[in-house]
Length: 582
Image (cartoon, rainbow, N blue to C red; front, top):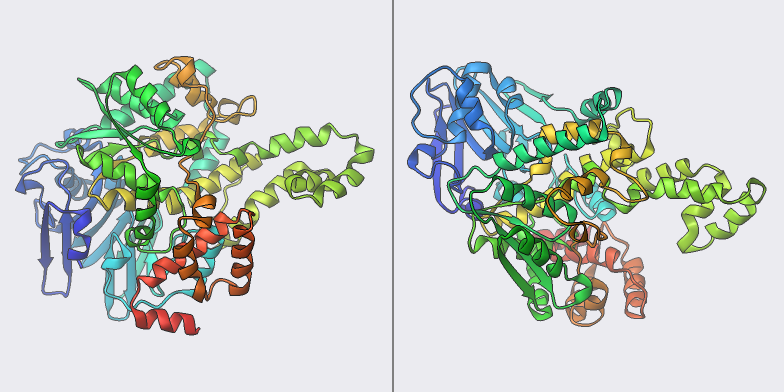
């Protein structure tokens, strides 16, 4: 099982077994304390606990200073975490930790195994509980379980383009939810939440940030700066992904402030200028004075890599930005082992277009005289481009339209896995759902698999739980202003960059999929679409494919099917035949 994870830990391996039927395997990507003193599985000083730990505790030096004086074997964060568990107990030790992690802790006294995942879900943890025992791993492919596709998970994938936690695509295998401790004994299991985003959002809404806009700006500058500084602690080379957008530029700027010399920045671009952000990254790097590595990807190279994407992701995954994320990770790995990223800024500071939709609808509804809203709305509702505005006019309630259009599908998942906080503003409710669904199940999965495929550790300063809690306490007026999001982030970035490098529209990390599917990827796509089965409607998919070839744009739906079919094609032939037969 551990050998299957060599790409996540190429530097060394270790195994622990005992007479109680427990075995722990580990692959190490050495980041802090490269010596044998940092090797795992690691035993606590008293011998009571045995730990395999994936990730980083960024404030480990501060935690070590709070512990009673003792002799240390080395200077790894893993050793500090074990000492904190012995001193304070597991839940307090985790609650005091600032980090990204998924780990397994064996308690030799209580004969219990605890599986723990970080608050936001930066690091993955799959597990399978059976009558014969438990297995767990950082990736699904490492588990020795029968690969039977879960039809409910497959249906969820078809809707969202990723498999949301706690489901996995394989029956009997789950993903541990973020902020959770699962404790397994011989006769019982117990799951607890040590950090609950619902409670965090509700507490923050009830206790908004007190102070002026300048006070909020300074608080964010100080806290985000500290988060970046903690994530720069490493015994290996590190750098930062730099697209030139607000989030990555701010992280790079703060990183340069805390560095003793020029930082290392990494940007990729595409020959197709519509999808090329490299000039923006280049300009920011020039202003900061960083060592800048840039790679322009040719269409031919990108097309060659597309069929390899399902090999990186252990479940079907249809976010097309997985390809550029993989490419920039591969570029960074040539000279660094750690890279910081700007992920999380959109979800916390209102960076997506749909975060502004409700307010825009409200203004447009008010511009139409009340006596004309019903008739005008029915006409506009019949047109694709004005459907939302038409529905809002008919109902005379743009906020209800906004809530329904943005929350409906996600609410089908929420009763089982995504409880909603009591928030008055529909924009904040949508932001919360983005934070607890799209962020951990799409964005963070994309970054983790792409970076770890090349043995690179990606760190996300925006997702420090202290930054998250501050962000939730800020009123929307500090995030959305003049129909633009990230207002406070833009203002903060102006402390470090000139206005010309701050004021540009969000472009995204996209690909020209529509054109690729019609021309250079057509043969590959048609080979995968010949035997489409559940969870898709084969006749409907053929109809969409014909329409797409004729000029309509169905790239999103088609890419979802293609990534599923390509992933399915990588499974054992017998499983594939059984799935298609169903």
